[in-house]
Structures are given as structure tokens and as C-alpha cells.
Image (spheres, helix red, strand yellow):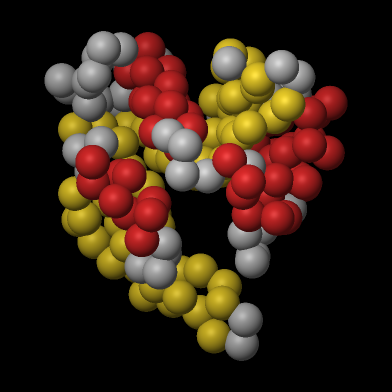
Length: 152
């Protein structure tokens, strides 16, 4: 398995995973905008197969995890942890001292992953996510990256 930079050439494969993994997926335009804005966008590939990806933004000592996703058929194998660890390593390399993310309260597996990686809930954004005819809140999580290292 190896990490690579996400490129526009990979967007069809990224969109395939995004649309199968999420009920309310990002659009291709959102990924394209992230690439064009210089966000840190990486994919995890094994034997030519795209297994997952991350999109993060780093500025002024902060990292924001914007999107992290694993191929639905490969979830539960530790790939999410690998993706998150790699994203945080990149963030630290770019000067991030803390990391933030939002997560749906209904996404219990993601919450368990984030908490196991040192994230703590620091806020709530009311009606943040689309959820059909309604909206779903977002839990805001933060992690201190001061002690984060590649061996963690």
C-alpha cells in the first residue's frame, strides 16, 4: 500500500467511492476546488486499487480534516486509521500544531476512530449537515498535535 497525491485523473475513482460511502457525498467540484486551492489531498492505493482518500487544509498552525473516506467494502480493516495518521503526519510537516474536524453524531465508527487518535469533542454545530428534508448537527473535535509523531 502506498500514499499518493490526489490528482484530477483520479477524481472518477474518488467520486465512485464517495458516492457509495456517503448518503450526501461531496461533489466532483468540491474535490476539484480542494485540489486547485492547494489543500493536501492524498489517496491510498494498493495494487492499482484506490482504497481511500483524505482532504485536509493547513493554515496558521491548524489542520482541518475536511474529508476522509475508505472504500465501503474495505471499511473495518484499519485503513481509516492509516489515512488519518498519514493526514496528521502531513499536517505536522506543514506546521500544524492542532487539528479540527466535524463528524455526524450518527457516525459512531468515525467517532471511535477520532477519539482513539486523541481527538476530544470541543463543540457542536447545529444543523450543519444535510440530512434529507432536515439537517444533522456536527460534533466538533480537536486534537493537539504537539506530541504527534510518525511513530504514534
